[in-house]
Picture 1: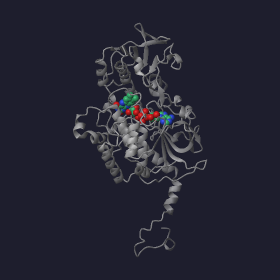
Picture 2: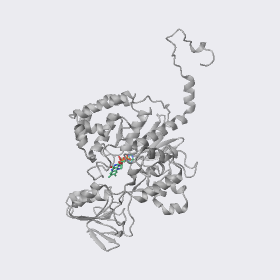
Picture 3: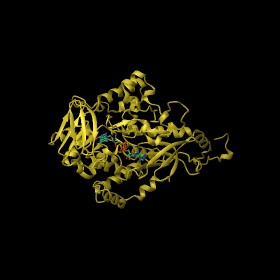
Picture 4: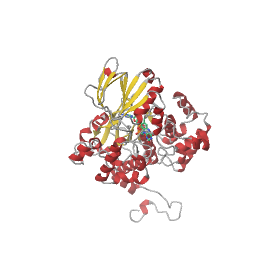
Length: 513
Ligand SMILES: Cc1cc2nc3c(=O)[nH]c(=O)nc-3n(C[C@H](O)[C@H](O)[C@H](O)COP(=O)(O)OP(=O)(O)OC[C@H]3O[C@@H](n4cnc5c(N)ncnc54)[C@H](O)[C@@H]3O)c2cc1C
């Protein structure tokens, strides 16, 4: 199933582009868009100037079933997975597969559970381009709206970001297998055996879990005495804001929202804009967090240096960041402020959530409220025990709890649950030797922030993170094959002097060279 990116690049053309655009209703990627077609040409020329894709250098290897072992299986083709895939092709590691369980256009949150009109990030951020100017968002936008359009643009529209990511993927010739999920990965000698949702079993030397913000745990559900997120009674009455929600069905309803951060507010606003009567956002805290600390650490020194610090510094930095929280974007708050029916209730934590046939009763510290529908805007959890794809390994995954004192763990329970990763984003063993192969699984998602900083989840750190991961994979694949590489080095025969009078055939040479 290995493929040639060069052949793929020459095959894909405007017809595919038009078909994809029509299929997914994407106004950004259409054949008629001369600007984008021209930009794609420029981008491919730029890539050719960089000798992209680089020649594959990893020696072939057969697996237990006789078929060629994959060098890297990338799981997830959101922003992080596709950038890693593209980075691997640049590095000359072409024997890879990139699988994505969702259909084309539904990767990541952008077209599904993200409910804000614009990105929080400033428009000039780079990342998925890996340093190629013609692959930046700015180039993509200017190709369609001109330099003036770029100047006038305030922030990136949510679906523009998705369309841009899909365009980059196509422009760099990265083949993504949509509709194929990783079910589980298990050790197989010095390889990993992966079961896929299409019935295939493949062997890989490395697996990259680029499985998203929820990829190191899942939704976070606050715990209440009378509420069970698994109970069928919650269907249609209680939602997590990261679930699919049919907002049209919320028209006329009174909605209680747990949480006051970005997704909580944007979901409340989406409900009101769809005709809900009222949406009340509750918080334990007395006011909104005011400062986005991550903005202050979004520069190359921090991004490159944080993961290289000792445990004490890394722990100090991220326990502070996690405790500080992050304010919702002011655009989201303004969106809410303008809507009749929107309100915040600060310093009013919930004590219980009781669901019945007609609605939901919420008991707070200040009284009892009745809602038609409740939304949990409580974000994602970090809990490696819930990452079912790697269940064979999870009991032995080293966590930050394993390297900090009992008091520190008690005081920072959430931080302590983060996995403790190596310098190349690889999972490490809690008890060495118990789960061989674990360090061939690289975690490239939000779960890596304690160990590496925010390099695999937010746009600003993506370039540094993807590059670091690709280099680590490259080094690991090389060193594991060192005997073969040295044999090849001995055997290599390059008749540089053949056109001259001084060429000496190998069997006539003095010594070995
Ligand atoms: C609502 C929202 C708004 C955000 N706004 C911003 C912003 O403005 N600026 C910013 O910098 N960041 C933002 N982020 C954070 C971050 O940029 C996004 O979460 C981004 O999608 C992260 O990219 P990713 O590739 O890690 O994850 P995703 O984009 O979620 O991609 C992961 C992919 O893995 C797939 N997958 C999961 N499990 C499997 C499996 N077993 N097999 C196969 N495929 C699998 C999923 O289907 C998914 O497509 C936002 C996040 C959210 C949720």
